[in-house]
Length: 349
Image (cartoon, rainbow, N blue to C red; front, side, top):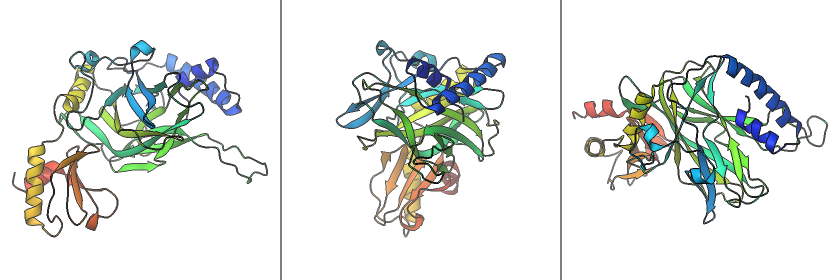
């Protein structure tokens, strides 16, 4: 895995003393040379921005960056939204930060959005970490709706790893071959490392860092279908382990800007879930399978799901045109039951 180009530029401004940072920047410089020589497929314009990170009431808060503070923000008008309307999911209120993948000779990747904290916003040396969750979502431009990503497609996120003492090499501390690990997002959820380091606050309490994202097949090939993709994160720090509110990051992969705007609009300007139809399906399931779904409570919204829970600890939820279940007979992990539209046809709606 290669470091982001911006992180290496930053390292020239804020020199790093360890060998690995220097050697990784040499690699990035070589890759940058390929970047300049190779034709790029950039279809939606520059969607580079920062996620502002600060501490509020002893909890991490992520928010849209304020350009007046010197960081980058994608204007709502670029996304086809009315002026002043930030990209926030209509149903859940979840903020959506946008980015776009770029085609390199051997991979499709990007190091945006960045994470930016202003001086004094954090404690010096405090490490910010992400918590990955959810399922990889996909906007299908032909069907014009959000669903789960195709089978065998993943987004790979590189995050920092802690350096732990190890005597296996005969030294007091053995430096690992890599100082990065990976989180994998796919339609089934999260695999590999669910939580890794985003970055470390500087001595003045500021933060500026970029992580590397790659979209690929499960075999590591750059062959993912065109569309928009979305992942889910929360942020914590070593000093403040209470997670932030959920944030979504939406990537454009090969769509013309007008089509990417449709993917944004399907989340921001309209609800991605037909809640009336979802309630009808819940009611149908309760009538036909009372042993599984006894004594329903009121439907609610949580973590992007439109859900309903029952007295036997079972919860069912709708998200991205799919039905999920958790608890009771379904176990402690979220289980994918199938397509929402297929269940509504089975129920006769």
